[in-house]
Amino acid sequence: MLILKLKINMIHVNIIYKEEIHTGGEWFGRGKREDDLQDVTISNVLVNDLYNDIGFRVGSTVLILIESQSTWTSNITFRALMYLVQTYREYFSETRQNIYNSKKLRMPKPEVYVIYTGDRKTRPEEISFAEEFFCGEQVCLDLKVKMIYDGREGDIISQYVAFTKVCNEQVKAYGRTRKAIRETIRICKDKNVLKEYLESREQEVLSMLMELYDQEEVMRSYLESERYEAAQEAAKKAENATKIETAKRLLRMGKLSIEEVAAGSGLTVKEVEELAGLQTV
Image (cartoon, rainbow, N blue to C red):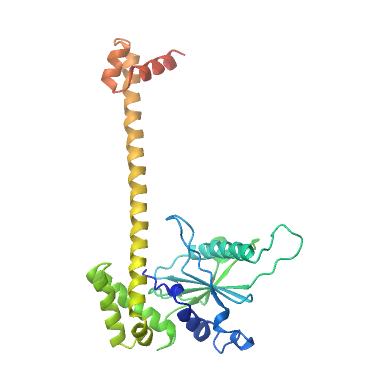
């Protein structure tokens, strides 16, 4: 799933927050301003670091985490739990609160959302960590994730979903290239999808999507290299095991010298001597 990195532009996050998550400005109606929004998205400094899609805080009152999914998975509830814990750790560090003190910690109220753009027919309003993993049994820990689907026609969520689908289609046609992004922007402006945003920030969108492609390519290369190294290691172990079994059979015959067994099995003389010592014990 291609994620439009809204975290880079807090104005766009602000639109989603005000228009979709808290319709009517519940929190903004209490003296909150755009300046109160703070990006708290977890950044992946290393390839295998923990990182999420979007995280932002409204002053010290509300903490919002948003993920985007095109494939349905129960694991998102566990990932969200990890993101939430990490975000709180960073918040306590920023506000210089010690979790080991007796004084009760101050923390913003958490809200977790998933924007789902797949074609799953069953669409619950929320999913629960305890329900998904422990069949709803009473457990000591739970986290509830509110689901957002296609949104209402013309609203920011529906436009985001439409933008994402167009982008995926263009990537299939042109690969992860600038042409794919430019075509996405052109088509979406023609269809009045995020038109105002794209017209005013076209270069920024182009840059952040290219950055995203680069990040995904690094991750893909990393995983491929990890799999290759694991396969190479497994092949070496299998080859060595075969050599050892061959040497053992030759030693049991009792007709060959240590040197001949080494030559016939592919092991070193020292390795064969160690095997011979083990077999005589």
